[in-house]
Amino acid sequence: MSVIDAAVQRASAVVDDYVHSGRIPGAVLGMVDSAGNRRLFAAGLAQSSPQQRRMGEETWFDLASLTKVIFTAPRILTLLDAQGIGLDEPLTRLLPDLRQYDRHAWERSVTFAQCLSHQTPFPAVEPIYTYGQDAELLRAFVLQRQWKRNTGAPVYSDINYILLGLALERFHGTRIWSMPTDEGFAFQAPAEQCAATEFCTWRKRLLCGEVHDDNCCALQGAGHAGLFGNATAVLDHACELLQGTGLSAHCIENMRTPVSATRTMGWECVHDGWSGGDGCTDQCIGHTGFTGTGLWVDFGHEHAWTLLTNRIHPSRHTDSGIGRLRVEVANAIHRPVAS
Image 1 (cartoon, helix red, strand yellow):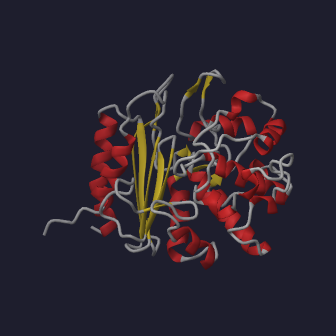
Image 2 (tube, helix red, strand yellow):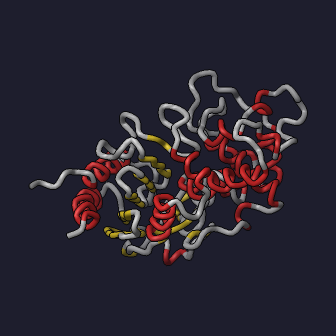
Image 3 (spheres, helix red, strand yellow):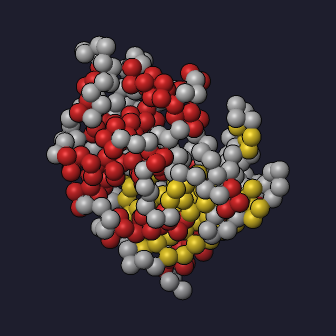
């Protein structure tokens, strides 16, 4: 049995326990090494209500905030390199109308690096979708809003990546949902092939194959969420990072290098209590998504793993234990084999 087969076998027992105990409806677990060797495991249901569908290894998921690291961060870093724009330059290089009615507004000094690594004073979350459903007016609202400044330590904020997404749209002259994605990814998925997420109280329907994130839906595409893909596509992306292909060495280095105790340009880095467990090397990066997704890439071990779940189906208001599940899966993957 290969190292990857053994690791996934250990971790699959953890996933099975969470599925059979009813904490999550279903999941797909996958692992790949730098040579492209991989193993996938699926368990449970892609949809439990109002009818049941089995989970499969090729089930598509709403990847939620994995959009930040699979789509938005690589494209921003590549664009900045191509245009000769420094990471420490302000967003106004691409969004000159940001807070245009107050030339001294603090938002105008926020840099690409700060947004990529969540080191800005923006608040953690804002229900932008409650301000209306006109996507163009909401874009103007995001750019002109006098944001409440967080005076404490910087927090993880979707607003950082909503702005980065607007910068991409402004440069390319098209909406994010019209931009090409890498193979195996898309901004919507056929419902019959997709894991269901939540019954949305304001859209008044069960979401399956359409974006769960409220703000992304209202904006009709945004940089912080909205990408769909399956475990195979996610592992393909991780394998390219391990092999140093698909993106420039400079781009990958930026995504690997810590800029704070917990963050790189886009990703989380290893720190106490993080989602990647205790057995990874200090060269590991990871990211999670609200819908129950996650990807971790360990350059030291030369392998990566993904755990994709539909933990918010049919409602987010349950205790799925997703935080603990992620850590238990990671620790099982790296558990030393008894001699």
